[in-house]
Image 1 (cartoon, rainbow, N blue to C red):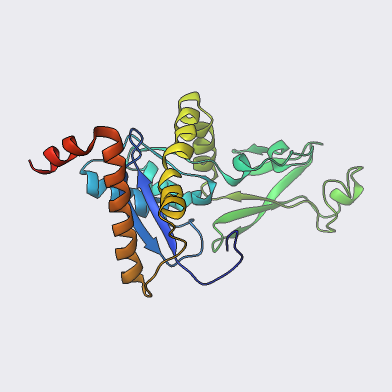
Image 2 (tube, rainbow, N blue to C red):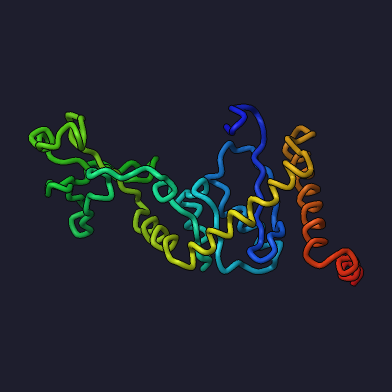
Length: 242
């Protein structure tokens, strides 16, 4: 799904370096979103470069906690905002962020002091669900504002919630914010060049192998044009001749 509506197509991926914005890895996948791509694309770029990056940055479309964990476990600084952090939505007084979690009792305390106990662990969605005792919310003066459910206000918590909170704090660090600002300049540039300057509005071939080859050619063309802008034609030819 995109600005042109919903249609059959492929999802192009690129990884660029921070300094020059050169494409270190390009790929095409047939998944309709980026949720499961972060670790794979960073891994492929690492293989190309022969070393791991100090930091890996992406937008909130890549904020799947399992993917972020794979990169974090490699000692690479992850700079990816959560969906909540990327949203401009104003938080209300009964937003989940205003519910305090108690590690010792594995429960939440709502803004009015009521306790929400763990009632279920959803293995499929990798999260726990918390509810107050029966009838507690219906007696609350905020019933109808906080929740309208007869079962009471439900709060969910990821099984890897501690990691999610750690990465959220990491994203908000000043040096991480500087890295994220660069992302807009560096990672979006190849797509702008390929779509606008080269007039590539879509892939010409069918099949994943064909479009991967197309993306590799387009990425190589972008890198050559970029290197000419950085060091000039003569220097590029001299370096390629070595």
